[in-house]
Amino acid sequence: GVNAMLRKVAVAAASKPHVEIRQDGDQFYIKTSTTVRTTEINFKIGESFEEETVDGRKCRSLATWENENKIYCKQTLLEGDGPKTYWTRELANDELIL
Image 1 (tube, rainbow, N blue to C red):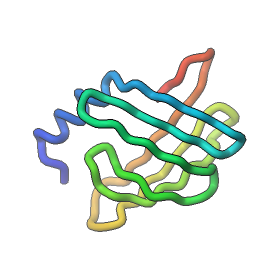
Image 2: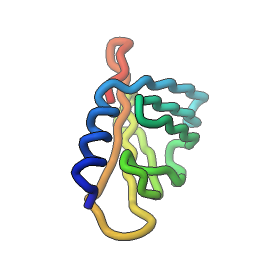
Image 3: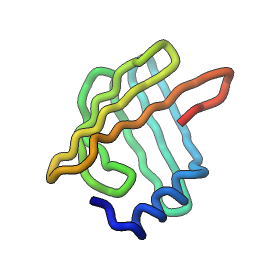
Image 4: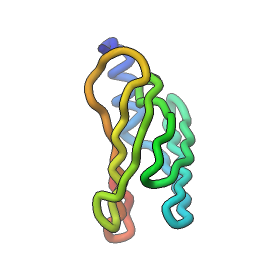
């Protein structure tokens, strides 16, 4: 699993991220900046891509539309075992819900 210190840092950092999202149809660019690190991903809905989990493990991800305003992305670790992870992004009333 993830060590306790890294988990605390990840939770603290993730509590107030700055998120930049660009969309062109089903093509997305998402940049997430926290006090700890910045991540950038480019992906197309329905096509798998590689990224890192919040705690830095490499994974293969697949994003799909859950509904017209919400993306659901399932992450599968490339090495080792761990909990099943995912992330979502939803736009509701001009607010981004993480």
